[in-house]
Image (tube, rainbow, N blue to C red):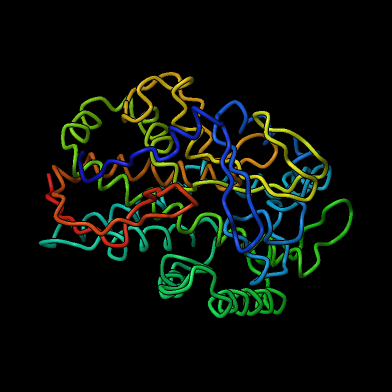
Length: 385
């Protein structure tokens, strides 16, 4: 097994039962493991709701560290549709040339910098920097704000020794309050000011709703983007022939990006709360109990994906659910895909090969399942073209 491989810990349970129960802070979760069932449950928002107590659909639950509802993530139709109508144009901006040019400038400069070094620790010396600077483009704030984001580390709600850190969460909330106050006093064209001027169903957004949108913007694409970038670098270091192929065959890059996203599935799963008694794979789901839609397991479903545990760069049939599915598909998916597209383009142009030096794997434990999501540390050496 290569150092960059991500084994599938769900195969046996997915094949034999289709579900598996885990405990989450004394609030059990029934993980749904097969692609067909994950998609069916995700589509059925009336039975499997996102509009529960704020924080409860997240696994691990954030009920004890926040009471602000993340919007539109924790809102069901029809309210969800009204918020998406407001937010989608903003979060589709990565399709614009000017937006992509800003990302390209940032990522190109970062690659040029690491090309000059003997080695780097890729998480804090590359992926965190890339994600934090790219976030300023998404929010349309000065790039200098990235230094604040970098200082928070790789997780919004997580410190080194506490997976759910209320103190660290408060640091984010204080920052958001400050920025909303500044936007009220001196409006600009950033996301804070845009939301202050926005309406949904004929009414201005409340401060709490604005905070919910901003919290989701920070939390939803933080560690996921960092893991995706880091895992991609590790894979290309471990498979120099793949970097060469992407360089030689630019026409497969879009498919390759979707395949890397499928294979690494940077978010393991997301929860829902049952509104009524139901069944998944002939297993009972009680009203007010939780299920999780296990994207990572669904994306390795051998009944759907040929050779699911291999990265097939030009995979043509790829109905992955790494960005969710149905109503609550990821608001930031366009931003994340654009980051990956620019990153792959710039790596192909500037980097001849990458050496994999050493790594400390990041393993999530979900009941019986030990899943590699990325790395705590990853040491690489870049070699320029």
